[in-house]
Length: 108
Image (cartoon, rainbow, N blue to C red; front, top):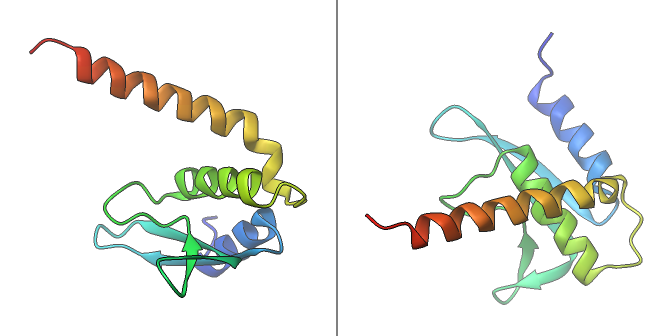
């Protein structure tokens, strides 16, 4: 059975911890778009810091990875369940950087 959007939202919010505000919307391509914002930090004036990035991957893993990095950097004392995935998030970031570097230096 596929979990409903609201069930996925509740699970993501539970994993993200008490500082997170999680919303899931349906994008133009009919895929779930995860929007995780921080209840304490702001960006661009009065807007809350958010893991959502327009035009980029906003699936569960990408958004949660950005959120984990935000917690590690800005709220090191935070105790969110998602922090247990920090090593995997760092590995994915390293792999993306290596792929980007390889594509950038590859002769055409």
